[in-house]
Length: 219
Image 1 (tube, rainbow, N blue to C red):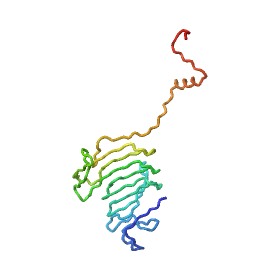
Image 2 (cartoon, rainbow, N blue to C red; image 1 turned 135 degrees about the vertical axis):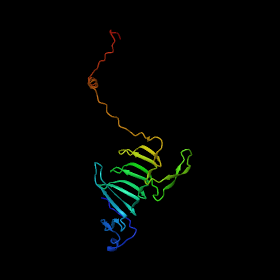
Image 3 (cartoon, one colour; image 1 turned 180 degrees about the horizontal axis):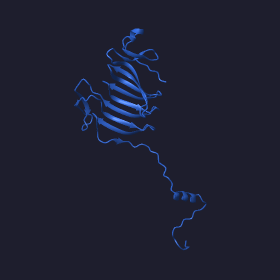
Image 4 (cartoon, rainbow, N blue to C red; image 1 turned 120 degrees about the horizontal axis):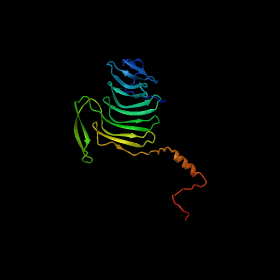
């Protein structure tokens, strides 16, 4: 079982710490978490539990809230305690590289996200010029209030860990065609017909004589 360790910005004792929050819970060490302040905003370290739903497995996520918004690193765990993902947030939206794993720790997916400042109607971003190597240009982006796919998405084979596909996005738009990487495959057994089975039986005999269609007894 994993141990939840949280870095607290301030340390208070007894009722002094508890009186700061409208609602809260205590972890095994007695630290306050899942805090809600007097303005009904989530603050500090949180652990959120999701049950199995409609065939989808449940999980838990832990990370940090600031003024009701997810921020920084958040980690995802299966209900058995396996680390299955790491996400990064800015302004309550996914940002940077988010990685996901199988319950055995094998990397299966990497996502690249870009979050925009919700306080701005428009934002600017430096993107690479596809026509000029190592050259960047500034674009003005309208803020739609959500993170967008931006960068390379990588898909991995869950068994071998081999990279099997990549997708490149620029501000939510898929660039070109999806690139598929050839992965080792197992040869599937071909079902044997009745004739093939009879032929194999004949090969197992001491001597097999084949008729080639010739007549006569010449050499």
